[in-house]
Length: 149
Image (cartoon, rainbow, N blue to C red; front, top):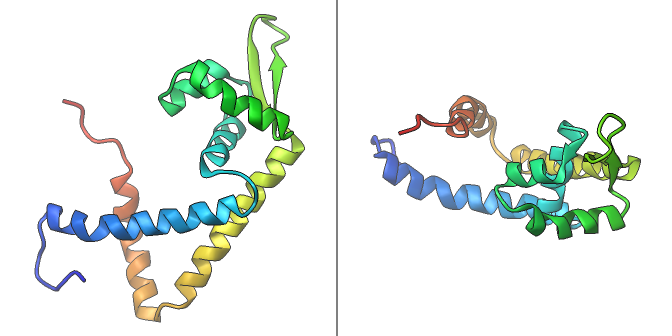
């Protein structure tokens, strides 16, 4: 556990990394209990946040090639969670959008993950929960893009 003495960023990272990885693993399990993978949930969330996103744009968001992503989209489409929609303005353009089932599964994923995390937070003392609250701005800052070289 981290002591009261000031630790270097490397030492903090060494302590923080396993905790974050275990949290992420447990949240993945909660997602997979609903019959979708975390990656599929991420793809659905990206499509929900940007309706009409093309397969190529979605692949760019994920940092993989469109052909590699195509199979994932095919499975989500076969499961009835998203659909391809041809643009009325440009018939060559095909965008992706969630189906009502896709929106419902995302809602269940969020609720299940939040419930799991709330249960764990409820087990903490009031002081520990307050420490988590105080750490939230710093944790959010970790996710902000850093300076480019």
